[in-house]
Image (cartoon, rainbow over all chains, first blue to last red; front, side, top):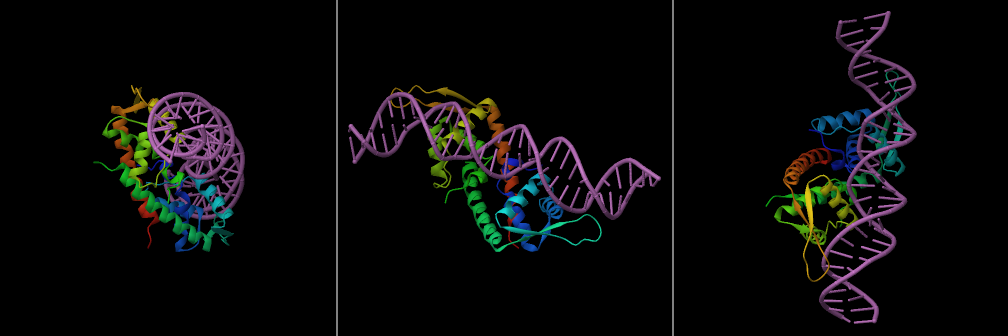
Length: 109
Length: 109
DNA sequence: ACAATATACCTCGCCTGTCAATGTATATTA
DNA sequence: TAATATACATTGACAGGCGAGGTATATTGT
């Protein structure tokens, strides 16, 4: 089962930022890692991913630079800024909040 | 703290359907009940709520009828259909799925 | 040799859910 | 009699997700 788009809406940014806490990363890699960690249940679409990179960089949460690969396709690497770290903390807190509320509102009797 | 719109996106329908499992209800009441149950952390906007009612009724998940109030403002009541019950089960299952995935993807080391 | 697949990037334009703003009407309370 | 609560509803703007399309290099299978 693959998680539907709308259920994840708003968490894309947090997921990406979280992936960058372990070190710089690039699009394709993050996409594969998210897929792996989620057991194939979350497949971030390319358009979604790259849209998010633009948004996050525009907001100052990540910075990018081209890698110096001598073989294979070029890679654009992203690194988390201090603002990005703060943002991630906020988004994780919001997730905990949301999780509580939805548990309450959707729980069975 | 109020839960941001985007984090809830996609759960509005499930929250409404869930509220109707205890018996028929109407917009204003559901809105207040959700607010109460969430400890004021989720305030469903009227436009969002009524848009959802139209969507859910169009899809056959709920049915509506006018109440016979002799005093006060008229009320439009909604009741859950069998399809709506099935849908709710699916949406709750999707929530559990999503919750697991996000826990995994956002967890700290 | 060459087709298929994997790696790796990117953008355009549509779709859909949210919601501010706005409007209607009745009942109660200060 | 003004304000607030109850109760419904629509319109149009906005933002995120993503299908479809495009570019380029490297590897693997036949």
